[in-house]
Length: 188
Ligand code: NI
Image (cartoon, rainbow, N blue to C red; front, side):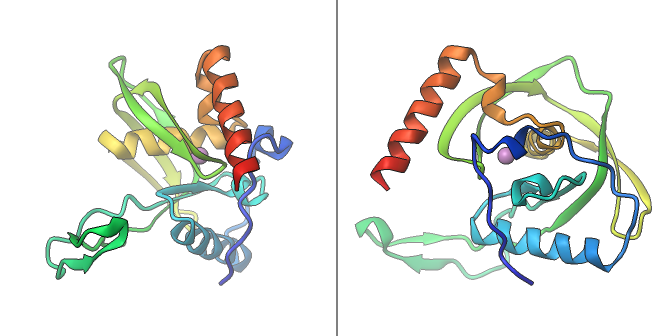
């Protein structure tokens, strides 16, 4: 396993349309393992292969819900002692995903992206959708998605089509986001 470098806007690779996976081999398994390691390290809840420079239709997602059975962790970052509920890993892989039946009802969510670090903006998307995808063995699955999963999979699907979330914003808001990002980079 290896942590791969996450490419960031305005890298032109992020505008590339990714190609379908045709071979379900060890190389694909290695890519997926590396993508999980890279995503957990970042940390993030979703990653498309193109974000590590590989133009294949592969997504990994882990919404990492709180684990109610785990002991809360006490920590004191931010200067005061408080507890965190540890998260439970729920890794999911989507190969050659397709969005079916997006709902007419939309929902706004304050999105972020590992390729647009530290920038957040509200994006409107269909509130629910059905997703068809293949697993690492090439078997096909279908499932209805809602809430954060629907947001996340649509955001990641966009990456496979060369779209990042700030592309959904007005030109004015997108320019503001890019200026803020440049400012943050200069300060870092
Ligand atoms: Ni993203």
